[in-house]
Amino acid sequence: MLENETFLSELTNFFAANRDKGGSLYITLKRYDGRTKPTPQKSKTEAGKSTANTASSSQPVEHKCLIRAHLGKRKISTVVNAKDVNKFQLAYSNLLKGNFYGLKKRVKKKVGIDK
Image 1 (tube, helix red, strand yellow):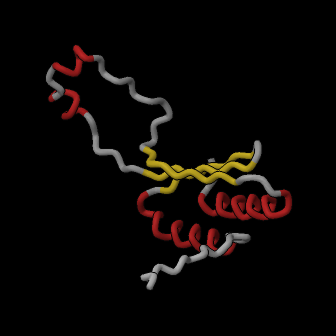
Image 2 (cartoon, rainbow, N blue to C red):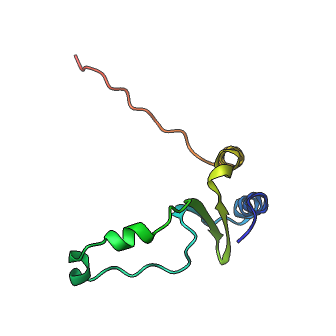
Image 3 (cartoon, helix red, strand yellow):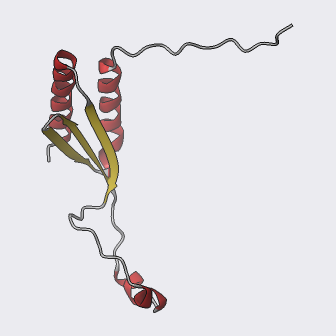
């Protein structure tokens, strides 16, 4: 896990390495609630019982965003808090805009009426 600024600088290095060597750079984003282990699913018998006790004991959780990137065997990740999303999103989008290269423009087909 890296800090947000460190993650963005390492991601820039990933883009530079990818430009030189080629290959695939994968970036994934997902909602993250801070747990490292999944909660087990309830069985059919437990699902039929009242869940009022479990609903009242659970606390509201501030959801975060988990961002992972990997290039070959190198992997990096960061967690973005809800209050930092706007600042991170601006920096992340500028980084992506600057590093999209080699993309081809889409050829638009003319749609018309044949006479």
